[in-house]
Length: 177
Ligand code: YK8
Image (cartoon, rainbow, N blue to C red; front, side, top):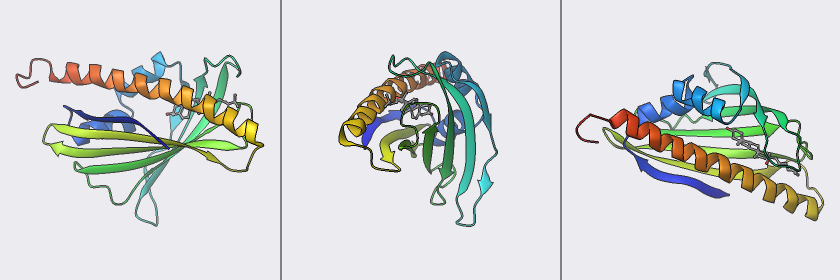
């Protein structure tokens, strides 16, 4: 896997969780800019294991010339039971892109860790991994991996930049920004 984001933000852990995992204005705007449309989500449901789950569906716009312009996607998010409100949140998101070539071979696993640093600060870490449901021919596998990494890198770099903007806005005029 790869670590795409690893940074301390002047945003509380609770607020960071809200920004990224609720129907926040921030996320809606970010999706607009990324041309992610038709998003729908179930609410967080408690699992027997003690964790929480929800499912998102949306359509992504793809800039990779090798792929069609759009794909529907399903994202299954799990909030681990080890998470502690305001302190520590760990979320795994499995993303299935249904309309790209070789879509039945792979999915992406993104792990988000939000760790309280102080009252108004948290560390955000995002790891991603490309997972295989069945083993493709070697050349196909490196093709999928290479194209996934470049798309993911672009996406998370953009997300980090937008979070920095949000941080600046939230802390504007608070005196201790
Ligand atoms: C989520 C991983 C792969 C996919 C894409 C597919 C290439 C197909 C390979 C062929 C287009 C928002 C990505 C990047 C689309 C975007 C997905 C996003 C960023 C040529 C063999 C969508 C996080 C996420 C997870 C997986 C990403 C796809 O929140 O390269």
